[in-house]
Length: 491
Ligand code: HEM
Image (cartoon, rainbow, N blue to C red):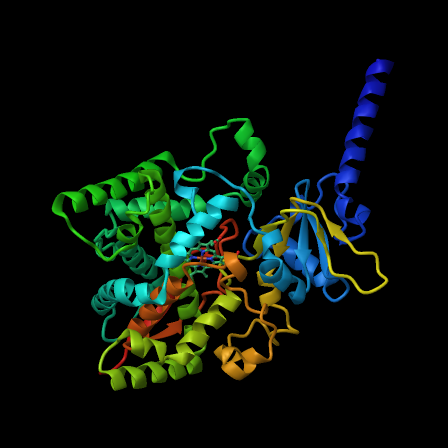
């Protein structure tokens, strides 16, 4: 009995000593850190992936007193950047020392540029950079997206009665983004706005549902992926059926084109001939499809919600669109480029609702942080996970006064010039910044132009003033339908 008690006591003190050491990693290395619970660390603070309370709290606690502070996700130390000059060094100036993101799941649908590392990333990035040019947007994508936006407007015309009605705009915008992205990625002609049982729509919606779920489990998978992979546990980020479905879509499209000697204006066509296997073609085209579908439809929904809340902004934007459309006679790529206030509105939406709450980089080698003369320089170990807390920066009142207010004027040229170049990180920065940003912006712009030119949007009484956000999703998404009152404008 006495022996068991001694054994248990030693075991317990061993575990507590180990945790104490783990939860003081940053302090031991001379850096500031949020005090962690002796047993649970910051487990209880892991409440929402997108709003990322943990990063926000660290940023607010130490900003101004250090360049970087530490925190913990489970037992893994994470560094939170608090200074925009340091963010610039990490993302741009010293980017060769911060090349990769965290290694997560490695399976067909996630084996893509976002998750790629080292040499593989460099090869893929070069290939995709040749494809995602403004010429490609103008020549290959603009017309395709405009056709999907016309379908969206047609659907609105059917649904909106002469006295107006309440519509769940999120659902309709999901369908628009899905149709446009599917056509641009694999050349699939679908009209999910008209058929809610369409197999493509059902499979694509599973992807969004897949992204929901318990945030603590999702973070555990992300941070301990290498261990879970070694244990060969059957953990996948996408259902096997979804992978199979999209592999089949790509295979069928390839066969169809080879048989009929057909050329298409889509991403698949541009990738073929670059020595990629069927698996690689599936993962690359799937990446465009999902990013276009999930991210752009969410940003579009958030933009319409804010415009409904701010009728004066909506009115100003509509005035700009109407004048430019009248001048050009119709919506053209050139007309769209002239719409400066539209650009500002989208950027302000991305400031308030950044798709990713933080940018993640891993140190490729030991990294010495800049220090004042005479101070002992602080060093980040190799393989340290570094977070640049985009959400916290975008809501920093010293950078954006009254950050909860929606004001596209923050992004007119004179205001932008007064801010640090890292103050807006909606698409990231440096060599790993978003490669699909022009495509994403194009989808959002065309959707907004089509709707705002013909409909007025206003809020529905009783709906929350702040848009409820899905807490478990990696990418920002409103958490439930977004109902808005829609009125047709007089001709
Ligand atoms: C409005 C829509 C979009 C937003 C807000 C957005 C945002 C972002 C952000 C914040 C990053 C991280 C950048 C960094 O770490 O510095 C990123 C990376 C990336 N995005 Fe997007 N994205 C959008 C649309 C798209 C689309 C349509 C694609 C389609 C191809 C795409 C493909 C990627 C890829 C491949 C990366 C990783 C790039 C790399 O590591 O080299 N994104 N995106």
